Amino acid sequence: MRPACLFALILGTLPVPAVAHEFWIDPAEYQVETGAPLVADIRNGQKFSGIALGYFERSIARFDVIGPDGTAPVEGRMGDVPALETTAGTPGLTVLVHQTTPDNVTYKTWEKFQTFAEHKDFPDILTRHRARGLPESDFKESYTRFAKSLVAVGHGRGSDRAVGMETEFVALTNPYAGPLQRMQVLLLYRGGPRAEAQVEMFDRAPDGTVKITLHRTGADGTVTLPVAPGHAYLLDAVVLREMDPAQGAVWETLWAALTFAVP
Image (cartoon, rainbow, N blue to C red; front, side, top):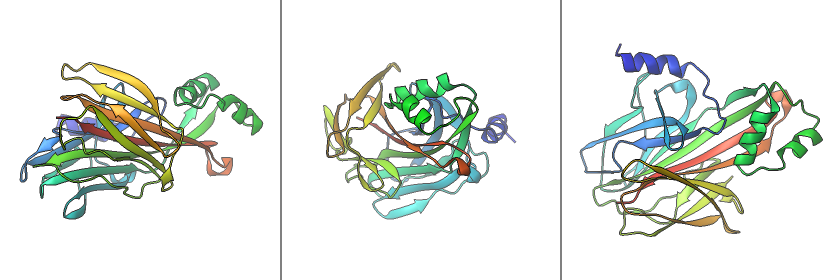
């Protein structure tokens, strides 16, 4: 077994903490030609930089490539890095979709959870936690990731769409359709617009520097974001909701992510 695959195999057996760590699909190229390799890593990290995770069925609830000709499930071998290696199909906008199975993280102290929750725009978390009579140490959070990525195959024309995940971004602007200064996206939760929600945007410039800004959806669940040619973007939004302690965790987070680039 190759060393990289062995490392991924070991890493894939370990829990990946949710504390302020984003999870995203990272294509090797955001624009590819028909018949060319379509390759993408699944990454976990911070500030748009992180480790590549291997392909492990136990942690995958859904992994699809959605193109003009329909949906094809991603099939890999245990430990594969990159997790996605296929061939680009019919020209058009192609959507990569990855949903994880739920996992848990244990918080030994309150401070770490509060820092995370406040960063993700839940400043009342302590009040809510105490109102439920929950312990402030050694408690669990369950988390699930819902990631999408937009790749242009050939001309890249077409539209993003809702793919039925519990929370997700839908790009209302095709970033490959022409020179852009603004990108409009819709944030969904349970199929409906998620209003007044924080969207964290990671903007990676051609020189590799990353700028992080915070934005907010309107009443219709949409937000218009500034973009620049040659930059790659990661959008992140988190739902934090109560969970029945009988299920093993007291809070649940649902992480929506979208990656794309502007030519």
